[in-house]
Each structure stands twice: as C-alpha cells, then as structure tokens.
Length: 284
Image 1 (tube, rainbow, N blue to C red):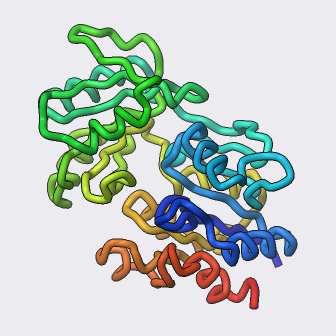
Image 2: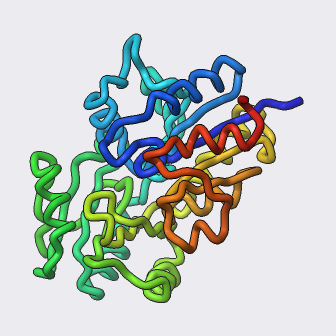
C-alpha cells in the first residue's frame, strides 16, 4: 500500500468563523501524522498572513505548532515545509507580463493590488479607479503598512506573486469565465472574499500556479499516488484541487455549486475536516 496524503484548505474549512481551530480537527491531524499520513494546508494566504493567523491562536512555531507537514500558500504559488518555513517550490509572474495584466484590469476599471514575489508577498502596489469598493478599502486598511499606491506610468521591473483584483458585490460566472478567457496566458483563480464573504477576488498568477498543480508537484516529490490524496475545501479556489484529488470533499458552508459537485461534510464550525477523514476510512 502506497503513501496517503491529506490536504485541507484553511479559511472557512479548517479555520472556524471565530478564527480558531477546533480541538477535534487538531487531534485528527495529529492522528494522521502518527499514522505516517502526509498532511498539508492549501491556503490562499501568503506566508505572512498564514503565520499571523496561527500566532493569534498560539499555533505558529515551537512546541505548540499546527500538526501538518507542508503548507501550500498563495493559492499554490509557493510550498513550504512546516514547521520551519523552508520554501521548496515557488512561482512568480515575470515583470514583462505584469503590465499586460494591469492594462487589462485598468481597461475594465477593476481595483487591484500587485503583490511582490515570495518571500515579500505581503508588500504590494495598489490602484483604485474610484469605485465604491468597501472590501478593497478594508484590505488596504488591513495591510496599510505594506501598501503603496501605483502611479500612472509606473514600469514594473520586478516579478510578482500575483495581481489581485477585487470586484465589489461579487461577479457572475459568465463574467469570470470572460476574464479567464481574456487572460488565458495566466492562471486566473476566482475566490470569495474572506473579508466580506461577498466580493469576488480575481487572482492572476503565473500560468503554472494553482492548488492542484502545487499538490501535483508535491506528490511527485514524495512518491504519492494521486488516487491516495484526499482533500477538503470550501470555495472556488479549491475546486481544481478537489477535482484532481483521489477524493474531494467540501464543507457544508461551501457555495451550492460546489456542494452539488462534491461530497459534502459538516461545516467548518462543526469539524467538517474530521468528518472527511473519518468518511475516508483513515481513522475511526
């Protein structure tokens, strides 16, 4: 029997609405590791944002760390060993391509942020077109010490982890598919805002970035068969990972479209991660 690999999303899946992790889910991750099952988090957060969240709940590094082996961060733009933080894989949008993306977003009058490449992803340039965009402003306020306005005529000389556009109130699937088609030379990933839980985040990455592609790279490195991968998530940026895995689950708080496509377990507030593992037969 080959190695098994368990991957869970973070916000809205493992992380509860109160920004803590249930003791049951932590015990489940500990049991998986005791049984030599590889464990990983796959999150849209940067390393900085992820570790900031762990510090709040006292599970960053040291003796009381979150019991996982790897963290796939920035929606797959990077992979690090955990704990320890050694980055073993990373991708960036070349500087020559950033102008193509920002010109398109300017044409569509989308507000956006250009995040520096790993390990400086928390630093970004931003541009607002004067839209009523509370979610954009809330994110600016959250990271104001790392944000600088993008001036007209700016030439992008450095690569970027991603360009993030925020569409207030959300975008319909037809609009999202149009954006993906127009930016087909890149990986365009749609996610629901983790701040207002309504606005659409359109994240534009290097063409080889996604949670599934990062997981695929990792299983090849570890010698794991794809069919021995179980994943659980809650949003559209998890969809490719869920479909790629041998078995994919969504928590009850996922959008209807995902719950119709994948096996549904309990919500993030009711230990859906543990239920997914139990239904897979990996623990009793």
